[in-house]
Structure formats: structure tokens, C-alpha cells
Image (cartoon, rainbow, N blue to C red):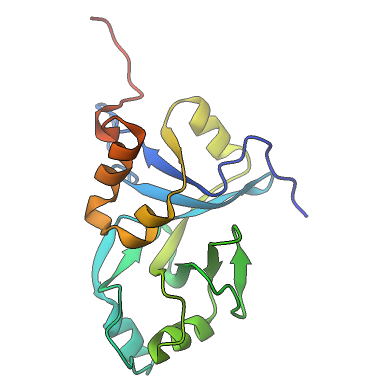
Length: 189
């Protein structure tokens, strides 16, 4: 079993510090970290909606949704494996391919969770994303040391109950400053 970093980012929200010098794939991204250990790190961007309708995914899988889906559009979870479906969700945490992040949040990649969501038996709170965000061993630690990311404790309500477009503002309000105004760049006054 991989050793967990004592300064782990697991179960935290990371916000990419905008740089005035460089645009990044992660600019204005809020990422929930699902794992952070000696083998690397992985998370899901929770605030980047795509134009792909969730119902279209279900239809392509021949799954009939018995009621309205709480998530209208799929998320872009990150640049790694963008053809794969990842479901970040609350309880229950019982599906075939589920990795429990905390006692309240898990990440599932098996189709049975999509079948359960379609039939109305899935978790009440879920985010369906295409792809994930990943880091090699120690890569995220180095980026944190360079002030590339702003860390915050995870907030279940922001992750699951706040519209993607409003999540950065909601987290900014919670931490007491505008995350978009922080820069890793420095200069002279």
C-alpha cells in the first residue's frame, strides 16, 4: 500500500493560482483531491462544465433515466484519460469499482453507479466527469512549494450543491479572500 504524505492534500480543494505570465490548462480550476501519496496524486476538476449533456451520456449507454438528473452537463475532470467516466459522489459508497476518499465521499468508475443514478437508486449527490487530473510522484508537492496551488479544506456543499460556475466565488467567500486575485508571481513595487 502506498504511503500517504503526512502533509497530504487528499480530501482538499485546490485552486490554481492564476499567473500573469502563463496561461495553464488549470487556470480557474477547482480540483477535489481524491488521493495524494508516494505514488502520485489524482483529483477531479469540479467546476469545469462541458457542453455534453449528462442525459446524452446516459442515452449513449442505453440507460433510461426515470427522473430528471441533478447534473445537466458533464464535467471535464482533467486532461488524463478524458474518454473515461469518473463519478465523484456522496453516500452510499457501495459500487463495484469504488475508491473511498473519506467516510462521506468516494470516486467510482464502474457502470453500475450510472445504472443506479439512471434508475433513481444512486447517490443523492454526485458529479459525473470525463477524465481526471493526475500528478507524478512528488510533482504536486513541488507545485505546492512553488505556490502554484491554493489549498482549502474540502467543503461538501460547495462540491456537490453549488453550481460549477459559482464554486470559486463560494470558496473565496468561505476563505475570506478572492482566490482569483492571488498570484504566484512576485515583483517590485
